Image (tube, rainbow, N blue to C red; front, side, top):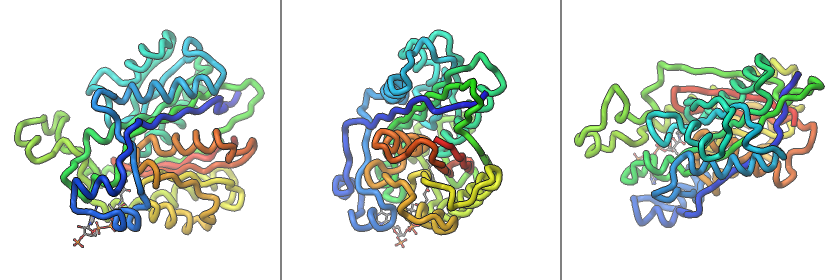
Length: 327
Ligand code: ACO
């Protein structure tokens, strides 16, 4: 038995916030944001649009593309760092809206690496339990509500969006997920965090006044760690798969910063023409970036049957991971 990607979908909220819009909010410039990050614009969810709402739109597209129906879905794994509520899981709320009565549901939190972790978790669950024949893996993020719109160091980086994949089991042994490498280093957990809102630091008036419910990041530390962790985990995945960089048709890195992506590609000796980039249009949508890339690439016919796609991500935790799929 193996696992295939049956369909993908993505969703970006309607509102677009450009770099020039940001110059009216904080002391920044289009030139600084473009040269330091590669980002030109990002999408921002409506006030009444929550993570499960965006997840719903992406999931419906993926279910349609897979040629299946919500009733056929056996499980939902939803990756997010910006859930509708602390609990219940946004996956359960999505299940109700999609109407997938027989699906197990849980949220998975590995920050920007969420989708990579979730694909490996879904893959392992499906291989070990034959009852799970179709699993929906969704990443959805409303980072705009945990963004400090007075902090130019972070507010220019993030955007909102969602992506979904339907995985299906095959009886002929054909398996799309051919290698995975996952890692984490909790020693650096404080380098990328939302300090308040959990049991460690409840939301108090003081926390609100000091914007402690927003993303705090040591940008330069994260930058350096991201490059080496992603390159190392890509190399580990290649080794597990018995492939070399020449066998990789597409590198799909987490879309946080164009400079990080170029450095990772450079370390792997993969030419930039084989690296998919859309950070210019969407910014960093955390766990959703890779899924949005995959959906765009598949819908635009860029990924062809039989091609090897190496996906790699890095994020809060710190977490990282890489997966190679043979499409
Ligand atoms: N506009 C203008 N100037 C700015 C801005 C801005 N938006 N932001 C920072 N600056 C200034 C700084 O104040 C600093 O000025 P100073 O030299 O006078 O002190 C100068 O620009 C340089 O700042 P640096 O932080 O050194 O800039 P750097 O080149 O490192 O870029 C960035 C910052 C883009 C944040 C980069 O470090 C980065 O991309 N880090 C990684 C982010 C990331 O990958 N996060 C991953 C996961 S996110 C998640 O999990 C949700």
